[in-house]
Length: 579
Image (cartoon, rainbow, N blue to C red; front, side, top):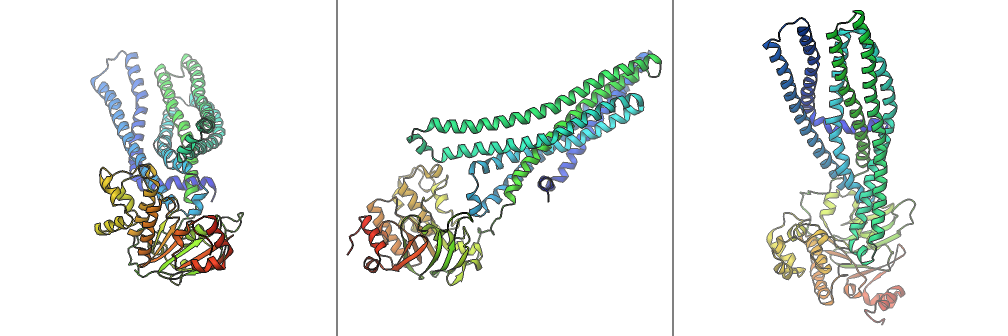
């Protein structure tokens, strides 16, 4: 399928549910346009009446007023129907696009930029409305009006019609040459808007770092440069569009001069009446609006096709099976984890992160993953959640290869606390219930007690219904971490993954949380990544990783005596002394 045909399929895929409104709006707009075709004939009748010195009759005046008012009312109703349809199309496109984005594989989202994705949902989808309200429908209506006017002009004087068509064909060919350039310029303009959004999002995501680094000026310059590129590409669209508009305006002027000259000569020769020339010239003026609408509609369609192409890029990316809304029963028993010869890299051109990872974490209790930065510890969690797919080897949960688990069931059995413990904008309650929206109040209170968040709830002005701000800015780092842990615990997982769960806690809260982990480990399987040896010293099993491989496994005491790297890590961190 070519890119152009794919873009058209995308466009009509969005309008298909609204085809009834599209037909109604188009019909009303067409009726309004056709009433305009009656006006020159009415004018001809008025001129003939004055020429014959006949008085204007009431019925004629009533008919004229009815045509004028009726056409305006029908046109307004048609415009409303089309605008309503356009808003529906934008809504459907945004919901469908967001649904697709959130179901993309993590590996695909890693290659995209949030600001550009936001531009696709906002500005690109808005262009779809313009395509159908001011693009296709008005263009079809204008084409009918143009055809009707040409028919009436042929009835009035065929020779003058030939003069008119000669000019229109010349200008139409010129506009046709401009359309591909308008489409290319529109695609580049939309892409540049996405680039600007991505640059701005980069700054806002690290707002405090930018300010503390005194880098505001440099970042403003970077955003301004992106905005300048967007402006330049927008100017290119305006240039080609204005050329098309100038061509239509020039066609109208040239045609008017030609018709006036030739028509005047025909009136002088008696081949044409004055009233017919007046009616012909009025039809000629009526051609200006349809031609302008056709050219404008064509430019809008080109912009819409560019937007549809960008939307289609997201829709064509590989997604994963829906992993939300799992309604089945999750076995409450702790689940063991097995890695056998796992090989993984984040891209074909990237070095392997896991080269031959093999270990078994028994069901129940706590297994700790330790090792230097870059050893592949966090990747273990990403593979367990199936954010990425391994290239080789076997990963099993509860003795069952994770590739054979339905994704929804697998993730329902796992609680995951990320290293940066993200908190979403909203209330504290909404954040806690994110993974378990139907949790009972008793379960919520238990999670708060386990993670020592009860004092926080008491201090907040609205308790659990207090807003936590963008990215949880109203909470401390330790509080955000405990909120993330409470959120995972509310899911009552069979397997709990904790990535640096105590990194932002003080000594007192770390001790309390270690007690929580020990309590949870009695009910489920806990896998924890930590650089603080105090967090993992009591683990039932410690897995030492280095350079994408498992170097050693054992207990704290055994590894202190039996593995040099573990002993070095313990000594370097000054958390214990080698025995």
